[in-house]
Length: 356
Image 1: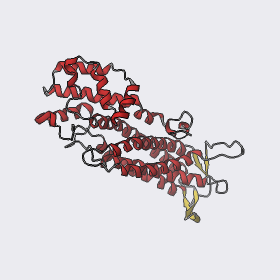
Image 2: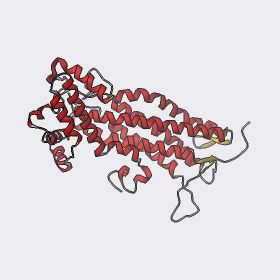
Image 3: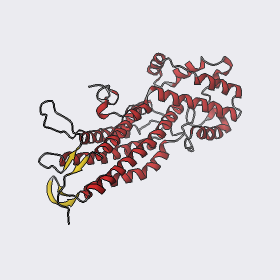
Image 4: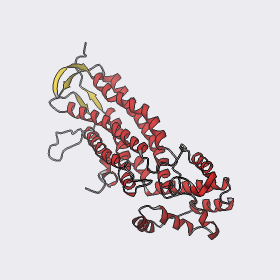
């Protein structure tokens, strides 16, 4: 066991996903934060808040920055956020006359939340691709095996014969609905966060909105009327979406695991897991993991709802809880979609008489 199964060198092979996990690496987070700071300096130079020379110096210094991770570790233990220690390191790389121009008008939450939004933009693109892949695999399974007769079960008891297509549709159609909702969800999380100390951009005066608009364009993010420092409904709606996706995939996994039982024999799994004691067994590992990841996300979703509760203009407690939960939910969903696609392409319904 380990603190997190998703980045464990062994357990990650069961539940992890390298492509999604990379979005939440230290390298990816710092790169996104630096991109925010460079874009902010450029936007402020264009609005003549800082000099063009200062913006160029900031860009040059940040593009070649090598972090002192130990100092950042100590800094976040002291400050609760990484930005004060990071900005201190970055300013040491700048000529003294330009140091105050870095991070001007911003607060710690601005680069952290914006860096998350940039990475969630990539995550939602990946989620869309993987949802499409699972839907296509289930379409192919329905075309091939949809006419095979299987037994329907209600409340775990045999009911009446139905076509396999009936079961496959119950796996596919919720995913199609999730795919349609994803575009709306994406817009609510890929937003610029830029508000300064208390969300009012007070240091920038009347030029604040213009700087924000330029910054949003440079980073490819949606511009909202004000920074949502303590309004976390968009992030939590995204977490709810993730739990819905894994929940729907978990239903598919549960069905497959039940139908693959020896006494049922309604589906055959191409890649079953072996047993150290019983070599005749072919365990439906992928189906089981879909159930596990669904339950995992459903459990973490409760925590994300707790993270909605920010006191006043910013909460250190609620914000930190969000950092601990959301990345795991994203990785779990990415892994579940990959595994579901593999499962859908690797099961075969047992040939029986077609339903009339």
